[in-house]
Length: 320
Ligand code: ADP
Image (cartoon, rainbow, N blue to C red; front, top):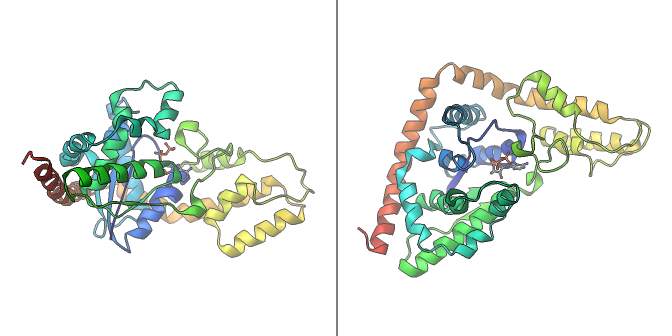
């Protein structure tokens, strides 16, 4: 089974990214052949500063390696190091109906936010389809917000296979329901674009301050509280054991515990859980040559695979 996922280097990674995408991907590397890449070409739809993009790409590489990505098991690379994927994007665009792209929530949301609708933004899902199909991926672990893009990929693959013959494996999205959407400080989906996030490798002071800002209801210290609607609790359970989670839920329901105390518990738990990752990241940061050569070796393996698929697609379509 081949597992593939990608992440854009468009800013610092946060705990929503970690639980929604990085952790599942790292766990899956034990079960199947994993391809993981840094989607720098996708990031170009929102990042216009080259120096920032370069730095973010490096930071994301560090983050993944620190969080347990093992380059001996997984193929880890930069999207832009595999030109076969951009070539495949064109072949796929031939069978991609405009309406399919017009219906994409992510595109509509970006337009609604006032982002200029250029072709890159519109064709974003076709590039994503090429990412997935180039490696004949079976499973694509992503957060809920990316599910539609994987469905679009399936549609495109089926259309191509029907029109030109069996070239692509039809992929499945893999969404972890328990952590499908990690809430942010304001209760909306955690996202760097809402600035409601907690960085995975943020400064201690800033991390604590952000946790103290999580929005809660106006119950007094004595009031019983509902763990099922509380965002502090929702974040705590991601880091705690089942026992710890149950104990905190009991204390919430009993009353007599304030949100301030729960936030302190969340901070302690989160900070301690991430300590080994922070230590590994600090080590890797001292060795940028290792990080770069890891990405290059990954790209070589990825290119060999993408080349095979691209050749098959070109043959099928009549441009070999
Ligand atoms: P952001 O919303 O911060 O810009 P991205 O859209 O770059 O994050 O998402 C990168 C990956 O992380 C995707 O697979 C996405 O589904 C996942 N992800 C992002 N935010 C969350 C969240 N709050 N909960 C779960 N998964 C998330």
